[in-house]
Length: 126
Length: 153
Picture (cartoon, rainbow over the protein chains, first blue to last red):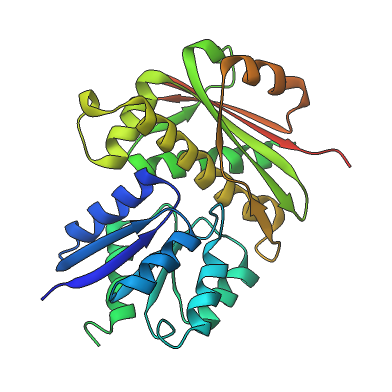
């Protein structure tokens, strides 16, 4: 059985790139959901059973940092692993996301970085 | 802007294009600027340790190649919306990677969602003389200009 995944990024090109990279990395994917901002992402999380969220930071309507805060405050969502894929280069902000339990991947990324971050988040290969 | 900072900026832009879409680029400061009518332009604003904006002007053949490489599809399949989205993401990535180099990793910035500028808007707002850095690159035998402005306080 594959994993259910939600990709939240305001760029449709980036969502496609991430999905292509996940498929290339050999992960077994089941349902893939997409959202273009944090608010849409939370709506999907409220309706679907998900194993992993891949999250951008700079997005309109609701950014990734706020979406993650909402997730961590909600008992039904707080334990879902999050991989943040972002251009964010600020150490304080990246450390804040990691304290909330995110695994961080910097854009632009390589397929190996995504694969390793997803495996780490899902506890694969431990 | 000093020569060292100029080189750092070129490195960030070249590295971003290479990692993002396997596009190889070289500085070409002596050539003319890309005409906005022959290209697509996107820009993003940022605020934080200092404020400003960054714009990328890319000629259409290489922009199509950029989008195709990002999406993993043939050039013939790329549409205008995909080109716009690819260019906006490129602006986001260059800006996000450049600001920590310029300001240090302790600085915090908020970067706006990038937008596409019409040739008229680009001509009116991207004034070379007002730039802090203006990088001209040759990319796969095509052209890309990057305008970086810091707002005057």
